[in-house]
Amino acid sequence: QVQLVESGGGLVESGGSLRLSCAASVSIFRFNAMAWYRQAPGKQRELVATITNGVTTDYADSVKGRFTISLDDAQNTLYLQMNSLKPEDTAVYYCNADEPRLAVVTYWGQGTQVTVSS
Image (cartoon, rainbow, N blue to C red; front, side, top):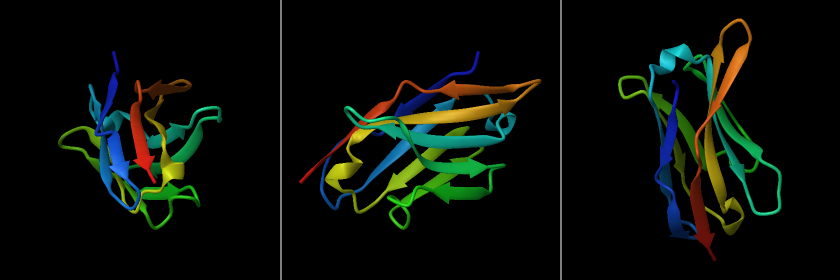
């Protein structure tokens, strides 16, 4: 059974930094893509950053230049380094992974709260 467990969220002041981690219970080589999403209160879940085939990264315009997505395949862990945080970054952050099988199977973590105070 695949599990994704996020950690690293918390309360930080505007301009501060946090690093989120997402530990997978299986080898991340099983996944062709991993991503971070976030959901703020009253808003839809939105895509923040993706990493495809362990190499190609992409970011939402709102976080470009501030957030960095990366993988540690030895630790089976996905990271999101978040710098220059803004109050509008406040949300629950979710880890996501796609496994290519007969059809793509998508896994989600339970989420970690990030709160940025102004």
